[in-house]
Image 1 (cartoon, rainbow, N blue to C red):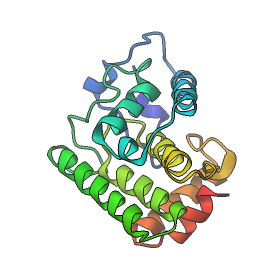
Image 2 (tube, rainbow, N blue to C red):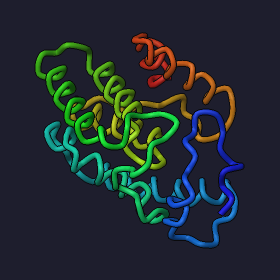
Image 3 (cartoon, helix red, strand yellow):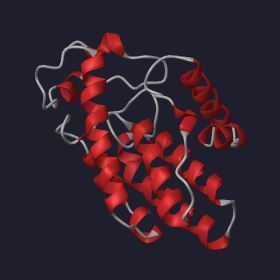
Length: 198
């Protein structure tokens, strides 16, 4: 499957061995892949809306992996599994479990001690989980849904709008999103929080 030509700025390419894990063998274009993944993601969103999760449930490695599997499991065999290869971003693959635990402990501390307002906690969590880059693909979409679940189930606040357009496609909205991510990489979370609510 020649999907390498369909990646846009900020997306992590899928390795050859990971491409073998595609469940729908007829997919031949980026558009088809996006369409099948989006349908799968919509099922995961519906699942998250039907359930009520506690902060302790959300802030667990099991939940992080389960959500990714629900988002991409109909499309990829490796959905919900920690990546086995290093990528152009993210921590070394062997550090992933340790980094997840540190992030979960940090987020629980922020909540318990009210270190940041709820929106900032959810956005900081989203940003850190992407920096770890747990999965072979879908990390950005997964992190945004994690933030939505944390803010809605954990804090009883509305989900984020994330600019209200598809961030998988090229355009001004994606450019603004990536710029806000880069600022957050340098500790400036204000623009990413504002974008999340835009």
